[in-house]
Amino acid sequence: MAINLSVNLNKVALLRNSRGARNPAPRVAAHACLDAGAYGLTLHWRADERHTRAGDVRDLRAICRERGAEMNLEGDDRPELYALALELGVTQFTLVPVRPGEVTSDHGWDLPRHHATIAPILARLNDAGIRTAIFMDPDAALMPAAAATGARRVELYTEPYASAWGTPRQEQEFLRLQAAARAAVAAGLEVNAGHDLDLHNTPRLARDIPEILEASIGHALIADALYLGLGETVRRYVRACRGEQPDAPVTQ
Picture (cartoon, rainbow, N blue to C red):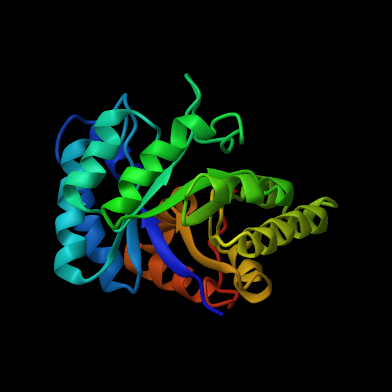
């Protein structure tokens, strides 16, 4: 079973911001990704705007409408973020906890402790016809609490699986992820996955965890594009999301 590939373009925005100009443009990269077969596009709009800005979200939403692609907006529970999701009618909104000072997302929601924080936001988005997802650690025991929030999907945090790749912990982390995906479906949820997925570790998910419907991949994909070109890289990741094992560039 194939996983739908949603390309996260935050790192393109980060590179643009490093020079304070307009190149590289996330909107140009968006067209290149969709031309190469990506199913959808993802942006994580952080409060500090260190990469994605509100204007990027508007640009990519317009492109996705024009191209018939899905738009996934990620972020925390700040009102201006989910208000933008409601205004633009994004396809999917993924609610992600943010810890001050973090370099990247590194943990899922602590449920049921955060239930009262996120459930009302999810209800508003669900009522507007936006598919909702919440970022969760790959813990099967947490999936009933995730379903109780009203989320339609969970995005399982795959960094533990990715960091264990090629080590003795690899099978243990794979089985933990597999169990979480099965528990999510049993609780009435659909399943996404994301974080540190690449051309090496994505194919096994596609082959052996059919519950995963979508993967959001950004950092590794953009890094590989420096060596392979963006179009060729997306085509290889699409194949990886079908369970194939495409060649990956040597990065070190």
